[in-house]
Length: 231
Image (cartoon, rainbow, N blue to C red; front, top):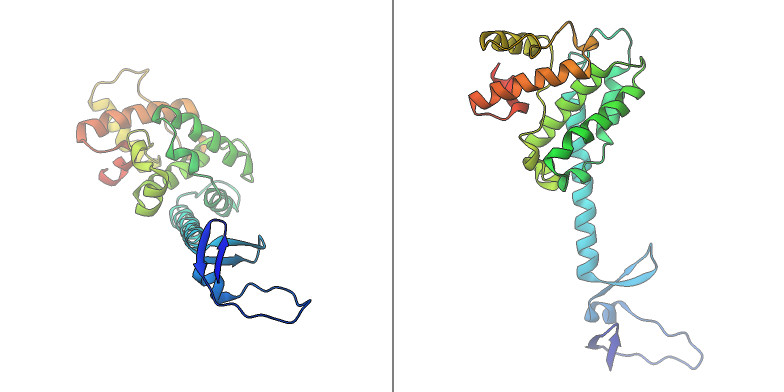
């Protein structure tokens, strides 16, 4: 018998039952037509579509695992030490593993700073001590630089096009090196940032540090976000 479902045709064997018995569409007919049963949606779906959906789900699970891995490897007790209270590390890790990176795949690089600031503010609000902008920004920058270096996340969210706008994560060592370089280049008093600790870092001084880092990175011909690797 020639059976047609949703425009797909295939010859299938037919078994005749007794009058009044319910019609049953068997596995052989489904396979011949290239359909599978979606038990959740309770409908027939093409086998190739279902396979694609399974691959997408597997890919998304893998990306989530990669994002979680980077959050936990990047944000350590040494990265957020001396903040005066516990739970900073765990709070940052949980926040970063749940960030939706999808918008970054289409965002213009000029829009990245605003995105970064919104996420910094959101993380800052979750910390056990409020108002610590510096540790929140450092956590974001560590995570984003490491995510851009992960080939799975970089490919999935097109993070390579943000390479030139990622910020270098700041700490005492990086700040000291940047200040030394800035003074050596004769930057004006207004251009040279002030540093005491990551705990006291504010947005204004951070922007000055990032401008110095951008100049230094340009001179060294490396992306700003990876500058701390060479310092």
